[in-house]
Length: 173
Image (tube, helix red, strand yellow):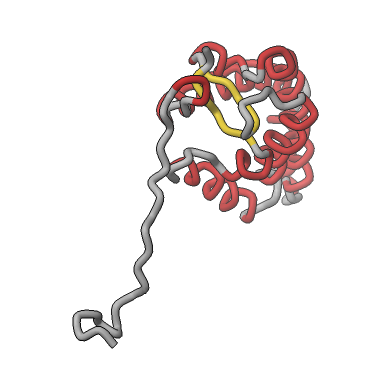
């Protein structure tokens, strides 16, 4: 045994730093992704509020609270309606360019790990279906969505929904 080596030292290995050289696959900035997400949320909100008002959501919630009924089924139903509306709003730009409306404004796009545009079915099913669908599960959904979003702080800037869908968000050229 080498006298210079500490037997209690943790094993050491060379780490490969994760770098992107730019170009075609330059990763989108986290702040830009956040702004794009907020734009998308504002669009969905602007469409959903009138639908919820016309659909009687507020009246249904008030009635449920007055009668002491659970609103879980009601929330699940309106959550599902929100996902469907979101898919309808975002389907066209996602299919055309791999971008949501917010990503279009912020000039970023979703690509697979080879830099190619994923199919609409892959994007809606794996990427958005997971992220929005998991949110419908009481308690666990909120925790999973938080974990999903916080994964953007990893070196590869890929959230959990990116990992599941095999995608990344890059600067659109």
